[in-house]
Every structure is written in structure tokens, then in C-alpha cells.
Image (cartoon, rainbow, N blue to C red; front, side, top):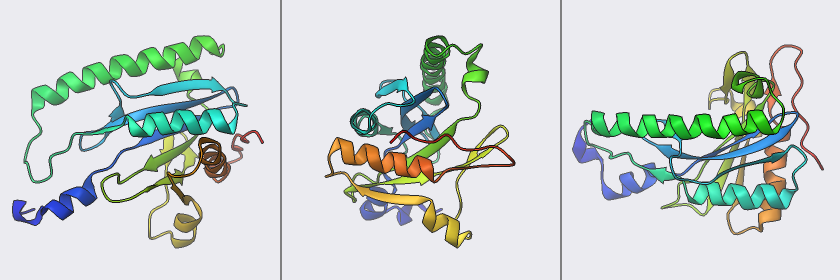
Length: 198
């Protein structure tokens, strides 16, 4: 793509922050992400976990911290972000990710990290923080080995699985919206989703 197409307005529209919410039968985890032509476990952003029956207030408060501490490192129009810089980021990101999931594994009595990640439902999020005052919560489909959202071509599902929430709402209202998004997740086959607490 021609670099001239990256106008200041276009660059502002591409800028975003994100965090991921994971719900298992035992815990809920909230993780800040950083964006480098893909999303990575944040090296410095907020991440937290609690038993799966955590209050809406806890969910909303910790999600807001994770989202606000997310960072965007892309440089639209620049051919390369720097291989050495990306390699160093990936190493630090992976170290922190493994430490966080090891803590979850020990706290909730799992055999290993792989087991802790099974039977989980995931809500992805996106906030175009330079141009919008709301966050989009995106429910996903649980599949063997991962999760996926629904694309625009799947019109009905695409509309049903996305919730736009103004960031001006209270932490408790934000947490309730996240519970709603988690309840819209789906699981393949005969699996059932984890039911968020009321």
C-alpha cells in the first residue's frame, strides 16, 4: 500500500487498544494486550485473575485498567517495525505470559498451563481510543485448539456477538456488559459455555 494513503486521519482510525477476558469453570482472567501487527500479552499492562464468581464491579474495574494500559506500537506506512525490537518484545511478552498463567495454574489447582486453558470462553475487545469513546466487546466461538469471532459475512451472528459499551459507564455497568458478552459465547460440538455469575 502506498505510504501516501496513510493520512493523519487514517492513522488515528487505525490506532486501538485491546484486552482479553477469559472465563473458565474456576476463574476469570483479564489481560492487557499490546499491538505489533498482531496482539501480544502486554509486557507492562494490567492483568488480573479471580474466582469465576467475581463481582461485576471487580470485572469492570480490572478490565478498564487492562484496556487503558494497552499499547499500540504499529507504525502505519512503515515497511518494517524492526526485527530486533520485535524479537525482544516477543521474549519479554512470552516470559510475562507464562508467569501469569503459571500463577493461575497453581492458584486454581490445575495440573499444568495447558489444562488451565481448556474449556474456557473468551471475549475479545477493541477500543479505537483516538476517535471513539466506546469499547466493542466481541464474543467468540470455542473450537478445539482456540477461539474465533464471527466475520461480517456471517451477518446475524456478527451483529449478535458484538456489544458496544460507552466507557463513561460505571465499573459495575461495564462488568455487567462483559458478563453479557460472555453469555453470548458459543462452544463447538456438545460442549457448553461457562455461565457467568449473576
